[in-house]
Structure formats: C-alpha cells, structure tokens
Length: 87
Image (tube, rainbow, N blue to C red; front, side, top):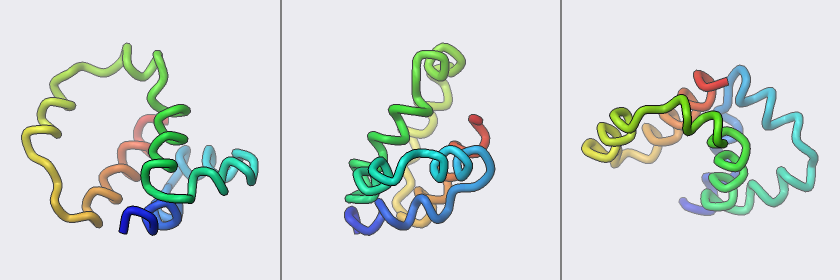
C-alpha cells in the first residue's frame, strides 16, 4: 500500500493542488510517485514552507495527533482536502 499511494494520491488532488502537481516537471512526477514517502517529501517541500508554518497554529496539529485516522482512504481524502484548502 505504501508504494501504491505514490500513484493514487495525485489522482485525488483538486483545485490548486492539482494545478501545482501537473505543473511540475515530469522528472519530479517520477521521483514523487515512487511511494508515499517520496510523494510526501515533494508535497511538503512545496506546500509546507516557512509561510505555511507561520500561518498555522499548533492546535489543529495537536487535534490531528490525538485522533489518528486508521482508514487509509480517509487519510488520502484528508490530505487532498488539506492541500486544496491551503492554496
């Protein structure tokens, strides 16, 4: 499952996340789609920058950590929604 998420998650992107992902060079897609860890690295490198950190409080992060999502589909959907709303 870890490996497949690298290819599945980008298909679920919407709005600004989708625009961003399909605007990056093909070689970045190849690197990103190896597995979930590589995709997460590319996502965080773009979206979770210094500006993003300044605009976030720790409360949502703490809430997320208190209630981990065990369903992988729910995690993918949550990621896609978060990326879409942050752009």
